[in-house]
Length: 103
Image 1: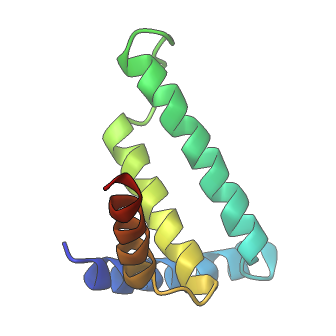
Image 2 (image 1 turned 45 degrees about the vertical axis):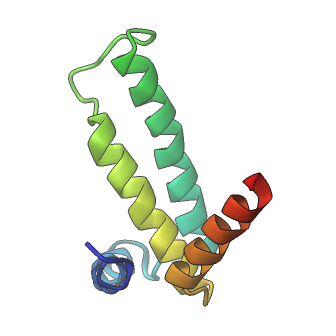
């Protein structure tokens, strides 16, 4: 999937969640709440890596590592969108900077 398609799909999904939050909480989540949700999922990525390497006992309700990695990417795209950042441009620039730094 290309990054632009990822960004568009992520935006549509997040908008649908905002509608659910409006019904549940009376308002959509703030950018800060989205950031905290991402941090929670990022922590779960760590837990799933530990689980995969047998450093943490798996529980029946555990999400798999692939799903949590994908969800974390989704959150990063959402956070970029809500912050007015072009994630494709930011990622391209970051990778270019790293490549130049390591050359």
